[in-house]
Length: 315
Image (tube, rainbow, N blue to C red):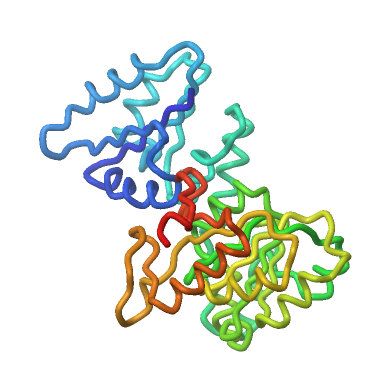
């Protein structure tokens, strides 16, 4: 069993908790330790966690500062325990990389996951002046999105999921869904995003290494996804509304799963709340009913770890 500790001076650790649960769900075995506040006994917290580990458990302990007292206490307690790993200088991407990894942990695996998480710490350039970027090591640059013709020419493939998500590409897509679906590519089908260069740049920043992305109009996405050279890649298609998902579902026959994720929070007017992540207007409820007629297994599911709730039960 994998167990984790997120430990810090003061309340940084507990501050991480709600964000980690937003991305990774709440079913991981994570202990949060905020040292030197209230009545927290750090020595007792350390001892309790270490003594709770079974011989076949693997544990990763995240601490805030390398060499700080919190780090020191866990390092001392974890000495000579081959299945316990301590990561100092924690940040959210590193924590998520490690928690969401399905691999058995080794020193080499932890080092690799830390390196991957470090890639998320980059300066975001606010101008298009390439001279500003010239001094940067090219090996540290974020991966560039692939162009349309490159995606088509690479034997693209089945649509593992068509997801309704009004935020399109964001942290949950980048860190969680991309892993769960073992994605090769993401296709955003949205007329507004396809016509807005700044929005495209912002969306592409979230895309993980090794995953190709393309942002197209609805019509452009349909043409792309109908290309029969689309054979072997695992794709996630993202749309902002249930109505757009309905249009795609009526045009494409290679969709494995239709997922209603985050939708409706940014829409004004009267809405029906189905879950805390899905709020639909009457028009969108009608679109959902039509979508279920095309894909009866359409389900509401925010994270892969959440239970799929058939949309039909809400109609």
